[in-house]
Length: 561
Image (tube, rainbow, N blue to C red):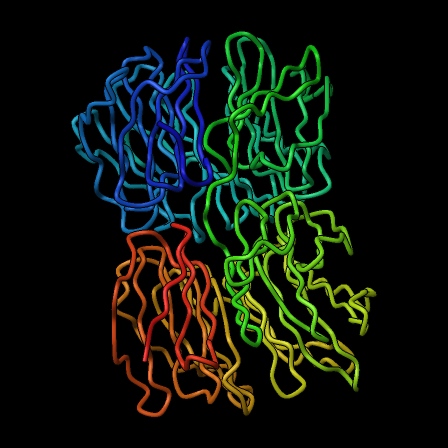
């Protein structure tokens, strides 16, 4: 037993470690032997897992809109928690193990009993709720969100007790026995709320994506997209003492960590199993961690179909061209050269593997365009910047501009008629003039949920897709009045592509469905599901006059028309 995709969640209790994977699996491991013991399955990505305090149960949170409770060590399914209307990001047992709190992208916090009965639904967050924790006495639940707030709820009545505004997204929150709250934010700060007072400790150069605490031993662990992990000793009077800091190996995902009883830290990875860090020796154990076959990007260039994914291997027509050594998210071509990059924040020549540029946070997407006769590429980052490079004939690049556009990840870029168009995880979108990089206009809350991708239609028009399962078409002449088309996708739309004459758009979902939209009739005309794994990327194959869709299962599907 092993994972076939990234490990997004991890938990430890006694001699057990549990991992939650984007391959829909929950796996239980023997912590001493690092050996898989049992597994369970969700119907979609598994985002998080946590043991009960008595070690008898494991709860998992999934993008199939459920949390599930499993018996330990058999992983026999006990019950399914069903009330949420979107991806469940976290599920946590109360200290007495009688209740489970959950949070989801439907912006709700819910409390269930062990039999799956929903006891409370708490509404108030205006953005996706990403993490939560119980107070020591189980009277309160603390939650953090994309909306920049940390909220305290009465667990018995469901009433909101307190709101603390960090003014920036927070992915992870913990609460100490004395009631002090610790949260990691997207500016790399640890927010400390003590007796209602807010204080910040600057901890990382990019967003903190995971914060894990062992309050019994006074230890706090933070993982960041600046590719580092820090271990802190918790002191009094809002004091944190940094004990150690380590650069994360390329295979480690900064999303998940847990402390083992022996003092080691176990982390999520992009591979088959979890990694281990020993603070005493400052060493990493990544044995048997091998990246899976998931493809994150596909691009047709001439007769070559380029792909790249979790393993960082660039392949052209099934022939390996380069190895970057880390997960890559995109492919973009200019001046006859192909570029890629991803989790390490590094931009590579995709044919040679040569490192061209390093950024302080992961790279997510790219687009090519011409600016006054100069070939350029724009790269979107996880920290909201758009990096613009001039591309030389020999393949070298020079940074022309760094556009500080968003505070959240840039999810998609496209270009048309002198305009650079971008979309953000915050649901914002923006148009920039490439002549002077000035903002033409910007729309907040362009979608009801995270915007995942975009493409250019031409004549000042762009299309976007997102978690709200809609396709939206934007006209620069009337940016406040998009055309909105609800899709038949049962899951969030991940990606979008357009054919060469701009007559058809293809969209792909995290559930493996592909939906075709006719731009002449402005109607959806076909839906198919070539795989049960998510669709990660779409490109148009001019030679075959068909779309190519890449999947997290490692396959490339030639579809439509």
